[in-house]
Length: 140
Image (cartoon, rainbow, N blue to C red; front, top):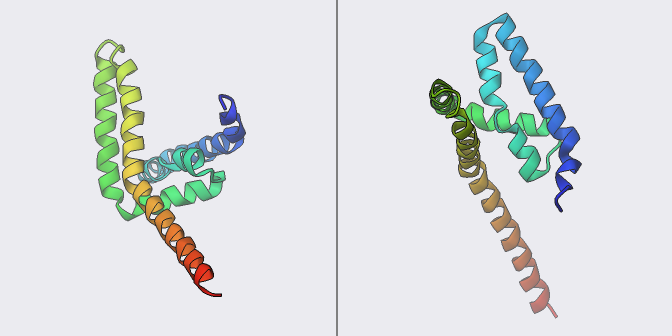
């Protein structure tokens, strides 16, 4: 199972490439679209890794979810950026601690926003399956 991550190499690579190009073009033409793309596609990698989505549906799902509460997520990522800048200012050594902490915080946000919806959907599917099972067991 150690090398199972290589099965996701192409979608992860494409997410990074396409979202990086969109973000770079957004920053080149106007700064505001670049900021929007950087924030909007921040959950894309997590959709690929945890929900096994292809690169484009993952990018769209990330954009749709983050666009609902864009200003909250923008504030969240500004705070994370400030934490990382403080890590760099601490002779660069603090950066070794702030980057993993940043990834953990982004995952916690992803789990908080998306995980609840996934668990609700799985619970509904489980209820439907159990309802079908009870219907088939009592109809003789």
